[in-house]
Image (cartoon, rainbow, N blue to C red; front, side, top):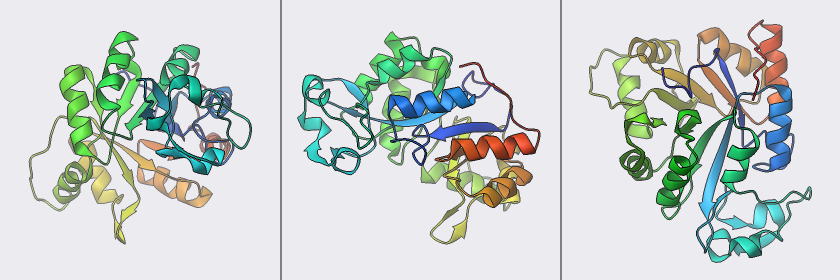
Amino acid sequence: MHPYLDHPRPLAIAHRGGSRENDENTMPAFAHAVALGFSHVETDVHLTRDGEVVIHHDPTLLRLANDPRAIADLTWAELQSVRTHQGAGIPRLAELLETWPGLSVNIEPKSDAVVEPLARLIARMGALPRVGVGSFNPARTARLRAALGPGLCWSPAHRGVLGIWLRGWGLPLPTDSFQMLQVPTGFRHIPVVTRRFVRAAHARGLLVQVWIVDDESEMHRLLDMGVDGLMTDRPTLLKSVMTTRGQWRERDA
């Protein structure tokens, strides 16, 4: 079991730190998740014009900071003056990793340019054991795997998920060396996370983590199904649900 996954399950993962409880992908959001006892957070990274790996989902600052500029066009010095709607700054990934050395972080590279700098940062900080990666763009994940080697914990994109989904129906398609499946509950009106899918994944030793789950009844339904983790924008609610079920474990991050 990869160290990123070697935690009590089901895993509770704060999506972007918990974007319905704080400005997403900010240090206050991550601090809130850690204070709740979360061991895992999910985040996204872009690259500044001068090569800093920073935490942000969108290519521009418009939605979170009412600033139309693109991160790729700004230097780190310029970006430091930007504030979100709630007054938080845009952090560097290194700051997140340094602030909570015991925190596990799932990272999605949101541009082609950030991939190699991200790999170098993970290697330089010795963060590989506590990092997981996933991307809708399989080429980015492949480049991270090439740079970081077999010690990288990663989730596949659509093709890898489809392979496991079809295995649930008895079609023995080849799959790659991933250890987790980070999936939505459905795709284009087709249910993805079913008991059949979970059984097929577990038969291959794969853990199923579902995003983005913000509804209480849906949390219960998926946990009853035996999924291995939930990503949520509502970390307080997920903690409450798991506590009620006797599945919450305080994590020391």
